[in-house]
Image 1: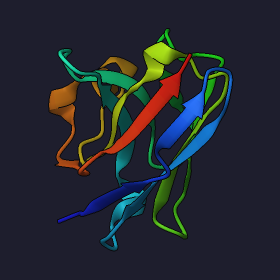
Image 2: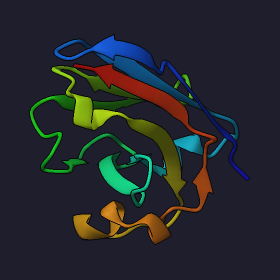
Image 3: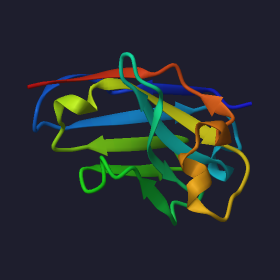
Length: 128
């Protein structure tokens, strides 16, 4: 069992930056792939970024590539999402998630159904 708690959300002006954190409980954190998803009002939850257990591979949605960076610190049981050059369309509730199963293909880590555990979410609001 893994429990995930996000933090770091807030209100920021367009062009600004935020860093989200996701603290995980459980001794097996380092074996899980981790992902960030987001959900804007009236829209479906969408993939943002993912990172494999050893941080050797990272994946990003095209909409955030070059602006967002996912990283993890297995010693601290924490995954981060550094968000730069924020835009109003980045406004959403951001969720972190943990996936226990290994997939060789990156595509699977972009899928909602791949993930076994979810946090409660943190609100990010970008004003124009």
